[in-house]
Each structure stands twice: as C-alpha cells, then as structure tokens.
Length: 328
Image 1: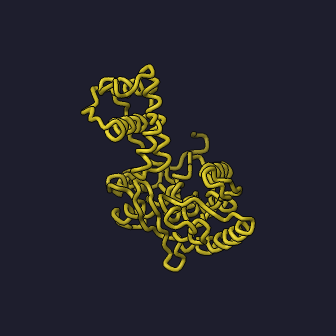
Image 2 (image 1 turned 90 degrees about the vertical axis):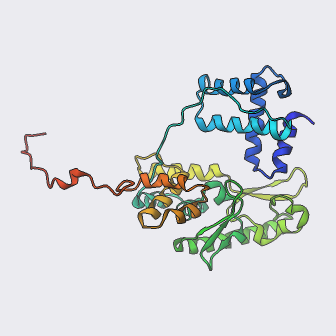
Image 3 (image 1 turned 60 degrees about the horizontal axis):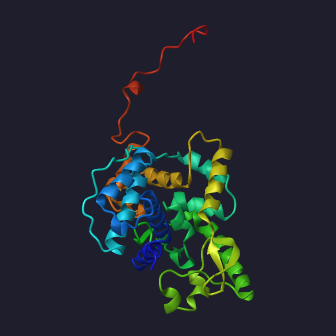
C-alpha cells in the first residue's frame, strides 16, 4: 500500500474526521518533499525536528500549525510505520501568542443577525444561541433537534465527543419553519429517486435504509444534489460552511461593526454573555464542549468589567471640569 493511502486508512480505522485525514496526509506529503522524496523509514527524529524548525523559521507558521504538523508525523511513525522515534528535538518552536477572543455586545449580535436572511440566519442564531461550532451546526440532523425539551444534541463534536446544549426559545419557531421546508424538500427529492444522505461510520452497512429516513436528514441542506461516486445514489449534502461564513461576513459589513467578527465570534459571545449572566464556569464548559476548564477561563478576561470585576479608579473621579468653548 502506498504511504499516503496507508495514512488515510489508519486515520479512518480510528474514526478520525475527514478533515483530520486530509491534514495528516498533506503534512506527510510536505515532509517527504522537504526531505528530497526520501521514504520516512529512512528518516528519524533529527529529520523531523529539521522539518518542524524550518516551518517556524522560514515558513513563519503559527504554533498551532507547527503542533498539527508534529501530530501528523508522530501519527505516521507510531500508527502507520509502527516505529517509536522517541522525543523529537531540539527544534525551533513557533511563538504562541496569547490572544483574547473578539466578543460582540448583545446589541451588536442583534444587529448582525438582522442582516442575515434564509437558513444562514438560523445557523448564525444557533452559533450564538447554543454556542455551537460552525461545522457542528451545519452537520446537525433532524433527530438531533429536540424542540419539546429545548435541547440540541451534538454528535461527534471536536475530539469526537457528544454533548447536549441549550436550544434558545427565540429559535423554536424559525427551526419549526426550517424543518417544515426541509421535510418538503426531502419529499420532492424522494419523488425524483433521491432523498438520501451520507451516514457516519458503518451505519450505511448496518442500516441500509436509514439514509433516506427523515430523522437522518440534514437540518441545513445544500441547494444542489449530487451523485455519490461509489454507490451512484442521488444524495444531498449539508450546506457548505463557507456559504454561512460569507453570509456572516457580509452581515458584519452591513451592520457597520468596527470589530473583525466571524462565525466563531458568535460562539465566543455566547460564552462571555453566559458568564456575565452569572452562570458558573463548569456549566459553560459543558455547553461549549471544552475538554479543559482552562480553555473556558479565557472568557473571564473579556468580560465588560474585566476578569476580576475591577472598577477603574477613573470612574471614581466624578464628572470632569467643563472646558471653555475655546479649549480643545
């Protein structure tokens, strides 16, 4: 088996996401080219360290990018080549700056949401109202929405972890309309010989008829259908994340915000506003699906009054002395 095919197969066996497979294959290919097309079996920790250092020095990549490349190469040696290369180093580490997330005020969130139309508006509403990641939101299926309990179940979120988060009352009616439209679209697709969706893991083999069942349909379907290359079935995918990203970016411009806001900014705003409302950090951690509470603690540093609830001494000085009209 070719090396890159072996990497992709090893990732699939461990049920990692398709994006992880693409990233790992890309890094292995880049590493082999950097080493003059030599096979990784001929290389060792010194060559891996040289590649990672070159990424930091010449490529000027971020620390997160360098860490992803390291994870891909460690996976290659340990899981594909079955070889323990030990500790990789010494290497030049990319600097990891500490950045605070951009957070919108409640009024700014409302201004942005008012500028979005169609199902992208419902998606953006869930990013803020439920704290979902963009990919988690567009991959929602009908069975994941519980309108009666006001819950959303996230399946295989980041780190392949399931969780339950809140469904805002404000979005119950828009979601009912969205599901009604999806139901009608699904019936039209079935009448044309389609109405099927891709299923995760081995479910397509275990439940061959589930792909056309209503509970497995996407909540936010794409406009166009496609023919699956393997089965030749007429299928419909979920809306592409870039379509929502473009809609949110255009809404931010139309709203006249001076902040650089993205889809993920709505998730940041969800967490910060919950903490402002007095919810404990553990609750927010569970709703966001963070592995560590330390990740969630970043939002305490972007509250309106600061992480420690500090009142500036300038606010205790009283009203400033009135200047004359001739003074600047």
